[in-house]
Amino acid sequence: MQTGAALFLGFIILQRLSELMIARINTRRLMAQGAYEVGAGHYPAMVLMHSTWILCLIGFGHDSAIAWGWLAAFLVLQALRIWILASLGRRWTTRIIILPQPLVTRGPFRYLRHPNYMLVVAEIIVAPMVLGLVWVAVIFTVLNAAMLYVRFTAEERALSPHRG
Image (cartoon, helix red, strand yellow):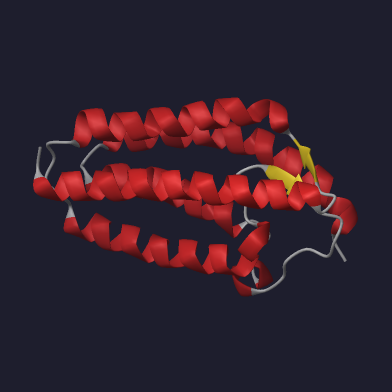
């Protein structure tokens, strides 16, 4: 295994696992405050898709050299991820959880309705490219587009009554 690839893949795995823990804590807290979930039916398919994406990165990219330009792009995306998470704070989760309160309009949400989805689209392309896995980027971009169509439709329908 290449050291650079191992460090990159380890980062992605630790990041995703920590985000799942944060999401679980935030989801429980939001539900206790009267929030409700919508679109839960597609969630297992989304988890399967993202897990398979990571397994493909590991299985096919573990011995790859790092493409430094793509790694720089990935690091820029991580700064955007931090901005998104900080802006949503305790309202960030991996599920569509609707809290009957005004929507977050600070940070990147001041400019875009769904910056996190744009981030994920970019990451699904950029992370495989760090490892030279063009075909993984292409296949999972198509799968993610289908997933986001379902998810975005459900989320927009649920959020539309809360828009000011």
